[in-house]
Length: 133
Image (cartoon, rainbow, N blue to C red; front, side):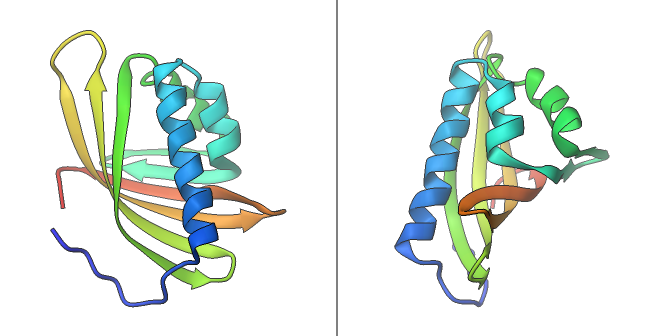
């Protein structure tokens, strides 16, 4: 599906920085490193919510990722990325986790809100729902 949200496209530099974070997420899943996710991918006050669940802040997000890092692999595809300011970006992605122990696969529609803080791009919010775009 083609997702188009009106707004300026981020620079190639910004897209590369966000892509680097997603590559880090993939590596953290593979290496069972939820601490990297909680501290390097998200801001300390980030919100993650989907379905009936909400996680806020480093400690709660760490608990979320302790349950999935190592147990699943992470795959993603950015569908549309929009700059909302010089220091803020919305990234609509397709995400997928595959169990490392059985055939379970879960697909997600995800919106990541990114913010540049002290020169580093971090996720300030993530909203997700099961399914595909």
